[in-house]
Length: 249
Image (tube, rainbow, N blue to C red; front, side, top):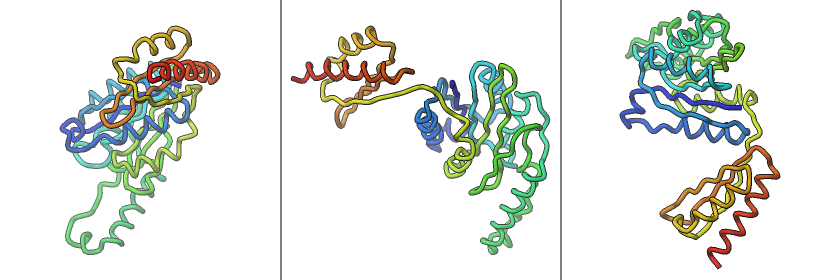
């Protein structure tokens, strides 16, 4: 299963917020055997978001989008996904009720703030999702997410909030949608990366796997073998271990 990640937010591009969602989602997807083929950060621009969702939906099995949900002026992600998938936005009753419950719970828990500030939300702006899409409740937050189903050759589109806690909870609702046959194994070596080239090239040439070398300035270097056949990966890893051991003997 080939998956892409589109993270939305001017604050990410400015470095004001660390893009932990991309790392966390990539790790979750890889652990389930899916292949993450693209990761991109884009600004809060409706046309830009829609353009990438449209192109990637046609090329991959799923597009995961995070950030830009809500009712403020820069929350344009739902509009963009609706544009990209040829749908209008609407407000399902379940989505409306979820936003109203969350807003009421916040007011009850924070009566002084509710009295001090105007917390009269535009519920429709916060609760709208594309038509014919599944509503993904946002238990820790306010705005729901959504899943636009795959259609023909076009992959599914998943839309999550930007707050990491909300992303984690919402992903759990759809985690079983993702899978694949990708297998990875990792070893560590004290050999410098400059000495590893011949060993890595030999393993790549002998086995149907990808081999990655990830140097560390503070400890042993990490070598990762990835493929779609568990036995092939195991054989390649064993061969790599032998070659690396010869370097350090």
